Length: 617
Image (cartoon, rainbow, N blue to C red; front, side):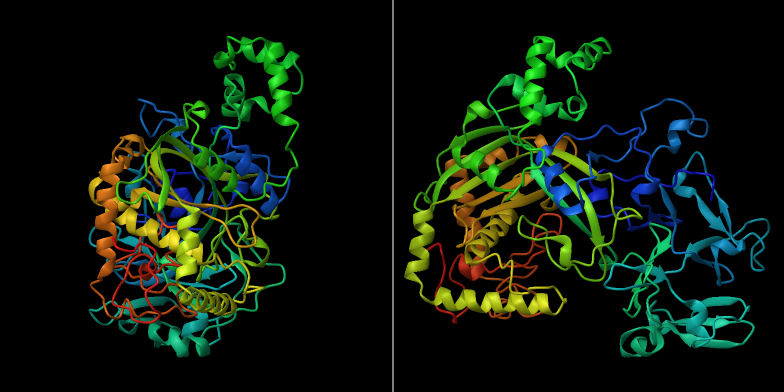
């Protein structure tokens, strides 16, 4: 379609977690696919400055990536939407699936067959829809609305395609020119009550034949289609199609990388250069600075000379253009564990306080993060199953990830920034060491957890399945983080989905030690900086919340089933469920895996023996 119409609105954070490139956005009257970066217009977007994140994105996608770009946002205007050119600035989408159903006569046809007509509404984008103009069951001059067909097919190689309607109804013979109709013969809306019928052949078939064991016999091989790139894989795909429903949660899993913007220097000029690096990185000579001053691009540097600024730019650009980034979280851990207020900037403010009252033997310090900035980049996505979480030890090499552009070498990736607040808790190393020494059964526990981790990765055909096990320390910190998040959400004033965790945990093979938890707000608007979370970091208040959080972990509404649960190839958690320890998907950095409340406090579980970290609380 050559014409462009606005069809809806998305928040910037949704591009990272819900409706990014390759996802299907289900609008009131339309269903559209977010297209790849080849079709984006980035002229209305200013790149985000975050060198640490850009460096690790280059390691994953190639050195050709040179910037992080937020979604294009049209400027505010008071003009008429129909006449405003800015109304066409946004994220490119295309109708998907390519088949629609008339709500009156139940005709099932491709949009490309011109049987359905697009009816845009320039003043109310949510009313843009397809209509069946020549419908025999239309009343008067009213053309009934056409809705998207709600059945799709996908595979574990991140391919997505229209349901093969002609193949399915004719059992392999897809050349019949007859009209198809999608009928609902029952009231439940289940697949068994939906029937597709061919008017010419008078054949009909229940959609239940496309699911389960019957689906494996009746569905064809995947065609290797990437609709967000308008192309197919050159060598096809060996997977078999799997039917999913429109809007299903397993249709799109984002693969993202995130860092916190931490100060790299206490020097005021150096901090300013870091903040405005997206512009200053293009400066190749000191003479370029005078031009930038004349056009008003260097107002924050009005108190510094060109020579001073040029020297700082050279110092900032030379050291680490091709330096390996290593552990993404280690620099952040070093800043939080030292908690030096002299490093505070406009985007990063720390205030160290005493540990929670009554828990001085478990924590060495609490840090109130009064201001922070997180930058997150989308580097790809998967479908059907989420194979694992990206971290500083996980590579894309063995993950069936879909590309963002046709040549698989993007020059830029979508990114968003979030400003908020948080609370950082640093565990005492001697407390963790004493916990491990006093509970010999933890060794057997960790072995079982590692075996479940390996079996889970084997079931998903991930190479070296035994690798990247986060370890017992991580499981303790992760479980504690979820328990505290659930408790803080009750009183801090933020919704549970507006809180997020960041776990700092080292492994036995590392030459450094990390044991800390950061819980922070993840709201992309002013809600993220209201102070409701930081106010709970007072030692006495936080100690009371820890008492309540741990007490809530003793019993679960699903006990004894929950407390006796053991990990298997389908899920990687012990005593944890939605009633006690799980958090919203956007809050957890591990997809609610590697959790066990038994590690925190004694529960109904009898085997293994009492392995709780917090004793006597």
